Image 1 (cartoon, rainbow, N blue to C red):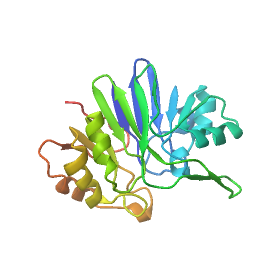
Image 2 (tube, rainbow, N blue to C red; image 1 turned 45 degrees about the horizontal axis):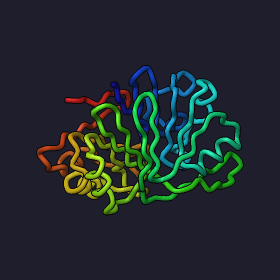
Image 3 (cartoon, rainbow, N blue to C red; image 1 turned 60 degrees about the vertical axis):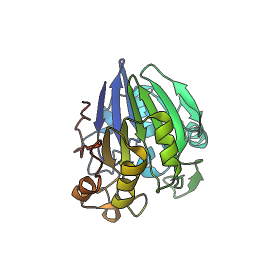
Image 4 (cartoon, rainbow, N blue to C red; image 1 turned 90 degrees about the horizontal axis):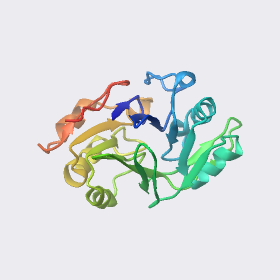
Length: 231
């Protein structure tokens, strides 16, 4: 299994000959190393409908005949604009794929998509993701504030790797994210996401490493294109 980070909230997984991408915001993302029209993907998973997470989903899906897995209202909206293969799910729902299992869980945020004409479309509830890939339980928190069910979700699923938003302003900031990691998630490794992409979410990411004080948690601050180290 290969898991890599590509700026903002983009995570790319390769396993069992399947290529999976989460929240492929590429065009307009100055921090990513990816090019949307060159990407090879079988499955696209979306946490919610905001433009900086849906990103280039339609283009990537069309180029690869990829399946888009998303909250049901977002999947329906994407179908309405020409995305052919979608699977609409909802919070609590789980589905098996060749690479592993995907479960949608709660996130506290908002969710809508603004089209090219400025029309705002409702896209359902925002979500986090639990991905079970062999022995790894990956928790991608999506965009979220700090909320107590993060503890329950993490303990129940025995999370080993967490992708946690830290950019503040729109999501948890560094202090809240570090608290969630130290007290609630307690993974083997944590990778900060959703920071530095835009001026409001620029942070001193080194402070996150300092605040994650649990000796059992390894902080991996990845540059776009770098892989998660599984030890």
